[in-house]
Length: 432
Image (cartoon, rainbow, N blue to C red; front, top):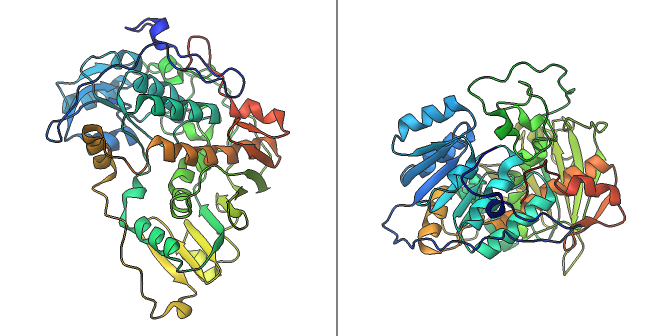
């Protein structure tokens, strides 16, 4: 594949072993400084589906570059933003000299290569969740963000809502007492499929080789795209990777969690080499400096409709949610509502005064940070640890073992077979 930059400039040395992190051989570019009243020059990598949602949310700025591997999607976006330059290859977009920032809204398997390259060029970066497809990529993105010192934000848009803020305040005020147990569940399901056996011709509008990007090449199938790539380990991580960063965000924020100390499967279907599990129950533990480890149980696919500790009548009406189990009661939440349990016990309860300021908007936070240097709430330092937790659950499932996690060394203690799922493996010509 051709590109407007030399291979030496673009390629970044990959991991050597588990933690041999290297940075790109090019220096981070000096970018213009903006006043709060100036508009950012933004490039959009992935303009359809979630990309279109992100594009709409940053359209108040200058959209100067658009990239998509589907010519039809790209043409539709270009009609809306006729002044923007268009690209099929994101590497060509990143060579555009007037860029200030990029939004990465591609499938998971190309998040890391696009985001690391953008940060290496001194650009501010917004990336959809999960931050990466593999744990080694996640660590690489976090390191690149620390070096670049640019504004970053992951696409966990629910974080900006008022509901999560009120829940965090309740947890941190001690409304339900000490919390040592959390349950997180979604009914969403992907996977449970067999690998495609036939490969029709690639549509003329699709640059399929660019869509595959860094991962090992496989013949085109309508079972992979558009919109169905989360079914496959090659491109994503199923329901856990999709919704874990949204729902596990709440306990991570409320309880100050980072990387888990362990992850293991409670129950799940047999592991498939190609396709993700349609249902799964996992248990994480998070070590804490004081008190016992926090246990967090994840459920997806509806095999068990929420935790057993939740009354059945509530479970029937909360298809997805987060349940904090405390020494004084329980706190149940989803994206837009929450309640204290048992309800009778909390009659007359006086809530703590709001202490977390309302968000100006998830994308607006990032835009402001790009211009002023103010922090974002879901920067890559925070969201990298959240992504690491989510991805570790999938590694535990694929190995079938309890993983005692050494986050510093990026390895599962005593489980060398986990490395194949921890480390990214790119095809020739692609590195970060």
